[in-house]
Image 1 (spheres, rainbow, N blue to C red):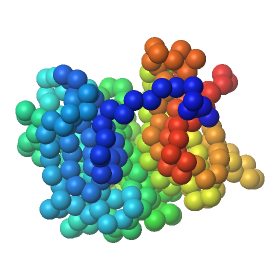
Image 2 (image 1 turned 135 degrees about the vertical axis):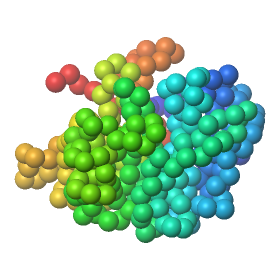
Image 3 (image 1 turned 90 degrees about the horizontal axis):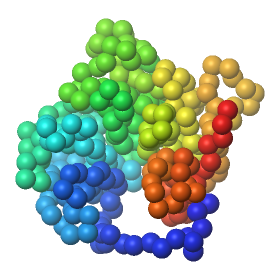
Length: 294
């Protein structure tokens, strides 16, 4: 684990009520989701700039893991000013991704680019988004306690989804059939068999995709690959007996409830370069994991 005494920590922004995720914007600004209410913009010195959007009139946030969750900025933000927010919609009960056009630090022209009808359980929403190569948007969606859905190619739950930035579906997705996620297979699916991958990241070195997984009794860090099946609810952790069609986790451990994850590529701590850093909800700490060469 990361030894806290070996590092100096600075508080950049304080007094935040249930912050969930953030993304950097140009001009030294940060956009951040607040679980029970809003999306906010701050500068990197911690000064509040503006409320980007207030979701309270349409938000379901009664559950422990529901609310305003993921946020990310388009790779071509400087030209299109697109910002994406993942939240749990009250009525009809659903998961939505909204694409906004930023103007003077506010959201304008909201457009629904992902809309998944789902009865709210309050838990297991996933809820993070990141852009990968070719400007494709990847989205983590939990099972919402519908555990068997994680294996179904007709359901978006328990999956990593992949869409274009306007909500259309790339034809090179692994289960693409007719372009309509409501008929045949759900064309948006990139990887399946996931209980609740709260967050994921792309390696800055080779674009590989790594995800945290909140298990029932065993948590995981997974190396996610196109079209692969990660086992839930058939098994969790390392399958015993081994099942060849299911991908094993890179790491399996108990009780951490892993949250955010990155592959470190900064300059201040060269000994961390290329290592996984992930957060733990249970222990309120950061941990590192070393990727070994195959």
